[in-house]
Image (cartoon, rainbow, N blue to C red; front, top):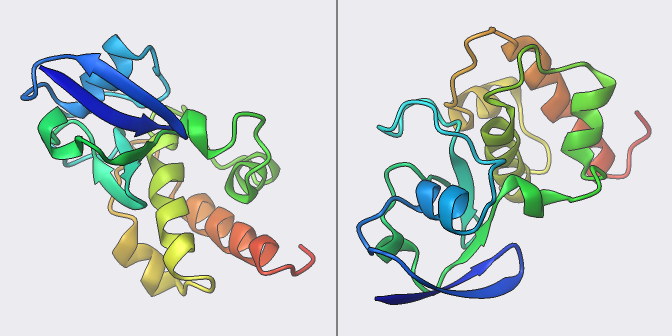
Length: 155
């Protein structure tokens, strides 16, 4: 079956089983490997992408659930690394191993799109992604730094 998507701003039409998880469509069919496989049950968040602007766990979202949607992956957040979150992550050395970070960045971007000045409690409630290295303090600091940058404050 042919499914239409808009991935990172580009129209895509592909033949794939509509029960196939969006994660595997992105990685295998579209060669967008920045979105990571972590747990396969939607618990860890390594596979987080935006579907119509909302953070979604792509490992549990079938292609049929994303049909005709606008999908943004880590590659579409900012190809040249200039998004405020990417800059904050680099400035603060947020990642340790880095495996969860594409999903973490996508979850954080969704949060900042809806809340320009999140509190620590807002961040803790919105960012349910897991980081096995435990860099949560730096993740929270990175989100605050990016929020300040997006608000036009000097950091």
